[in-house]
Image (cartoon, rainbow, N blue to C red):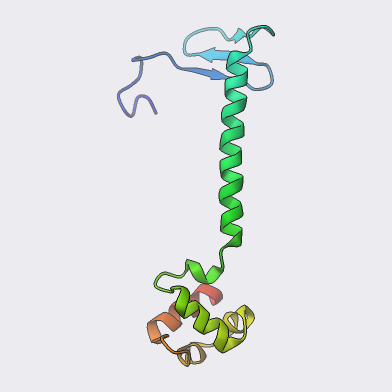
Length: 120
């Protein structure tokens, strides 16, 4: 990656192995970190904690999204119309294109998008 952006050799880069707690640098022998000098280990662990928390939060938000919200051009009002018309999500999942078009504001192209979203 450093070579790709012309940064190779411009600054030192190190990698910290997790289990052995060793520091690896290009063209050098690995350095085993002493118990007393654990600043790098703590920095690595904190970075991992931060990234993992972010990904869990992001996954959690995605899980809460209604699959209808993933369909481009389908806003809150049309989603409400669909839910009212079909009495819930299951009705929408199994509706034909013609049935979807009976919902006010849902034309043929949007009905096709909805149908294909749930039926591949």
